[in-house]
Length: 220
Figure 1 (tube, rainbow, N blue to C red):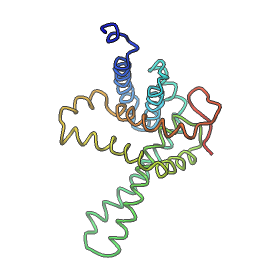
Figure 2: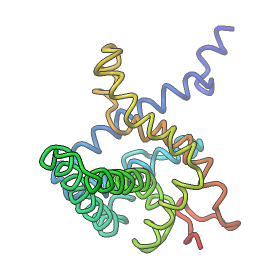
Figure 3: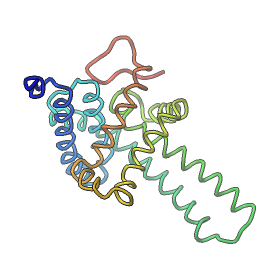
Figure 4: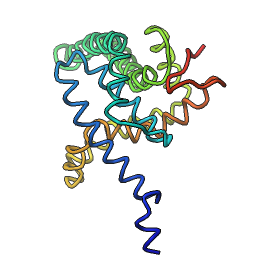
């Protein structure tokens, strides 16, 4: 019995080892995101590693992270800047109709509904684009299209990911303060790790037959 407990191939020990990898990823993600403009590349690199972790394909964590960071720096940065621009525009529009244009009117209601719908579409799409960038070779435009397509087609998975990304931090802040040290230690990579269990199942449905070295060819 004791030999089974202390066997490092035990699923419990393997999961603990993966959590240690996530801890390392958090340090790397923070450091590589400090310039802010590189946050897209560092987020892609995190997903590159976590998608391997959930498939039990883990290798050298640091080397894998920087391999993906370097390969995706240009394209992931473009995606990140586009998301910032779209998010800024939608955020300003919502702020305007929520706080500046307070007079009740049909126009205000319609515009709130329109920008609210676009904001939800952008949010759901944004949850997929960096994992897609980490997993598949695609042009930026195609990555956004696939992100939107998957977020709608797999809407229940999308809502589950949204619950993880928003619900877990909110629960740590307002409901379960004991979770705060956990989120502080593991940060965003913990959310990416949990998301990857859902994303891996989705991506498997779009994988080509001939698999490569961790990033596959475009989804058509």
